[in-house]
Length: 179
Image (cartoon, rainbow, N blue to C red; front, side):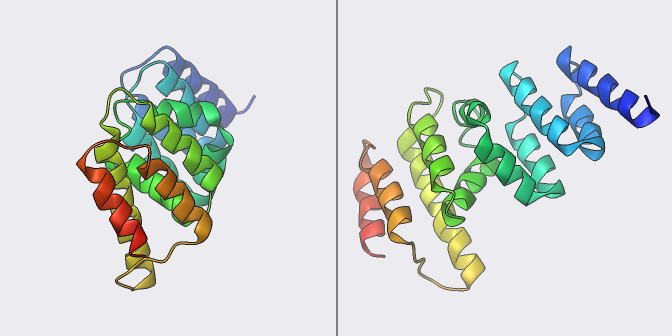
């Protein structure tokens, strides 16, 4: 076994026993083996570590494409992230908005389902944040003032808006109808 492989297993063991510097350990592991680090992020989240935003920052900084691919393939990770108290955090909301804009609608649907049943957050406020973020990202990327969504994107968003309660529902439905 070479030194790199040995260090990889040391890092895995340290994360597994719950060392306090998990984000630092994940960062080092990511430089050795991206996929293993991603799996250990899922493991750490399953053990109650609050590494949602830090994990998104780390993995997207290294490779947005791999992060999106691995995240979309992992239903347990989607559940851990979007059922957590950190689900309405900046990084997880931006990631979800990017899933919608990138037409990863099956994964976005799974994440929205988890958000809807998340007892730690207010779904109505979070859905408004997701929609505001999605609009802002689209307009910024395309240098326009009004976003344009395809039919599947609209149906997904409107479907979840219709499941909302409270004052945000009418506002968000109106915004979607104006598109």
